[in-house]
Image (cartoon, rainbow, N blue to C red; front, side):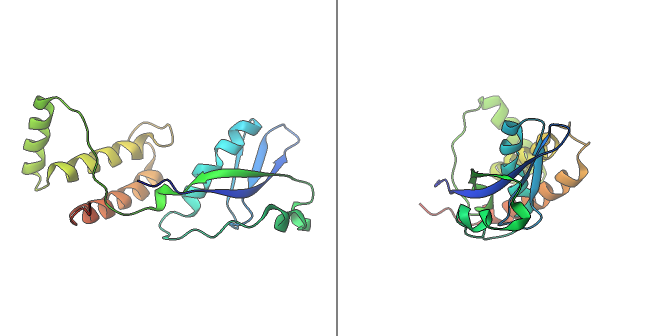
Length: 166
């Protein structure tokens, strides 16, 4: 699987209380924050994923100097942040896992009872688990994220039925 990473220009602002806000000018309305500069910059990945959720293409990032001349960002500090866009890749890929034979037997039995194959069952279970833990909140306590990941799960299951290209 090819990693697709791009560098987006961002503008960092420090609040009077010491927190850091980050704006991604190429994605209007895409903002994030953190208590430290490192945390704020790390949060850019999740902000971009949320902003581009459901999209099939990301905009090509602008050169940093395009925003440096913008008066809306005159009081900010500019940085380039590496963003991994693999979350937008929707092709089906083959993966190998290691599991106990007894666990696979149970998975296969439950999947068959639900009308699924092993891959469908494992992807659905993993996405449901991720929906509850992606924001650090236990399962059942993150309804908005769970809903968006549930739609991803359904889309992934539909696509997983396609033959895998070598």
